[in-house]
Image 1 (cartoon, rainbow, N blue to C red):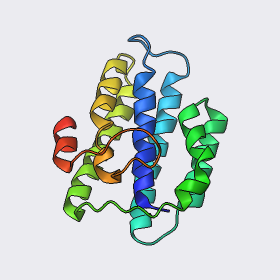
Image 2 (tube, rainbow, N blue to C red; image 1 turned 180 degrees about the horizontal axis):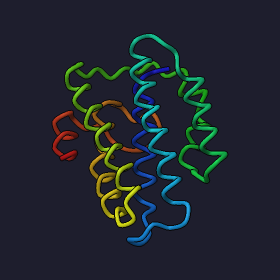
Image 3 (cartoon, helix red, strand yellow; image 1 turned 90 degrees about the horizontal axis):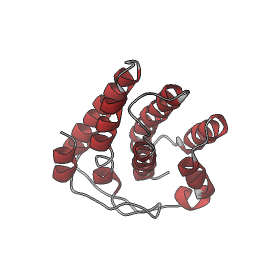
Image 4 (tube, rainbow, N blue to C red; image 1 turned 30 degrees about the horizontal axis):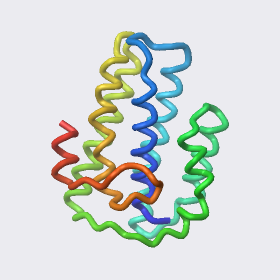
Length: 164
């Protein structure tokens, strides 16, 4: 599968999650759901890297999406699952220099780490959602055109500026 699709799915997941914030205290089950999503986001980054190396990870990626949809009510991923056939045949390639991609992926990984640390803190909800606001623009610099019908493309420099 096109590696850019993984970045796009990551972007959609972060946008969906950050838009669902309610209150400043953790709700029942919110921490576990967010940790499950962080795990999925990490896998998406790994799958994109493996796809770039020529290893097909689409089966495992869609299995992960189906598993999280079965465990949690996350319509954004159900929508992605419904587009599986279209996404599997996508041939659009968005080229970003390897060094720029590495910097953005490293920053995304750091942001996911920070979200996970915030989840373990009883008062960490505001910080977790603040980090998601930083994170949501970074994948846009790596996926180019809008394959999933949402979002826009940004430059690497814009993504890095928003990510600080």
